[in-house]
Image (cartoon, rainbow, N blue to C red; front, side, top):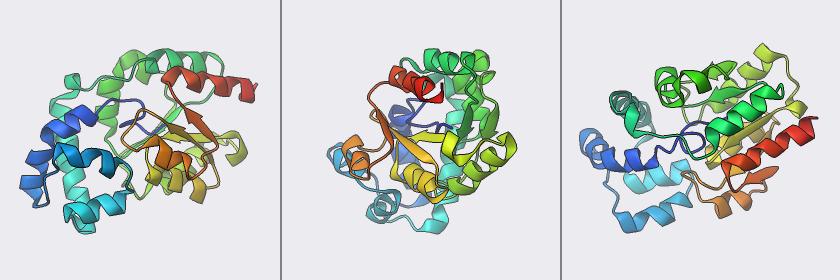
Length: 205
């Protein structure tokens, strides 16, 4: 199971380009470029507190971001190696799913039809704090045991969801969240490059 933004899709530059628009539209703080490295080490609630964004605004902000991405999907690329990695995993019989707070439409647009066809299950539109139930739903639909599954993501909320559902977590080094902060929470696996994810087929085999 994969998170999408910051894990498969390199959407942070697009988020940065529209962040001030979102901040002004929804009444929270803009972020100065020098603040970004420190914020990457924070969890979602700490970031929201820093921005002055109450929890009730999060769904509204997410909806606006999803709409902006829908209109600009061509500006959001996949990370290098993602397409080859998905193909490698699928060819070896690994069941692939995406659990994301983004919309399925955006996910499929950015993936493109060839990559999207490799994904067996899409659980999209989740709250960033609501991915646990989506992970559980994928496991129920596939009949795959928790011990045979892994959720791969880039933020502490992804790790929290996997831990809550007793699923292994793989942390990626290229996403929104700071990899050292994720490593401090002892994920089962860490990946420096997208191609490194292919090593899970050795464990599966």
